[in-house]
Image (cartoon, rainbow, N blue to C red):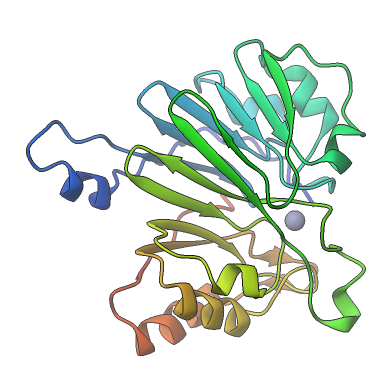
Length: 247
Ligand SMILES: [Zn+2]
């Protein structure tokens, strides 16, 4: 599902939450750079995290090389052996579920870490929890079976960041606590409707939610509708729309 157009613009978002938390010191900013669809770069101080890097190497031109790479699942919009081979991973810890590890080509990484659902790891200044991601609707069960892929919760500075991976509104998402920044998928038929995504978000109440992974074979999901459902019930949740599908 990866679209291969060349992209040069980088959107950097200064996290207001981080600023508020560091009123007396220099603000530590979490930079969120959407690359495309499910692919993004998160940067915080010296930490540069590539999430599901796929697509042409041009997409990553001018970006710092990663110190961590997270892969959520085996599908082409999350894991691309060619992209992984072309990126400079020599300074990166590559974190993947077992099903992804089994499909990896030979890579020059600093370290390969296999994490499965329920596992936690602590690195220098990054804590990672791997949590389930899977489908619930009967007709969609074939897309993502429970246990194969990982959603991730990262603790970076004072912020807890949730990356949903490809999932529906599973109880493990609804029960999340203290999430500052959430990336939540919503596309059909692979993940879930905007209504299901909004319902789950209203349950776990992240401070900010970034809809991502919202293009499917049935077109783009209505992200404005997602925002209006969320904010109709809870105006404290900041729904942030980034440019995930650049022309
Ligand atoms: Zn996907």
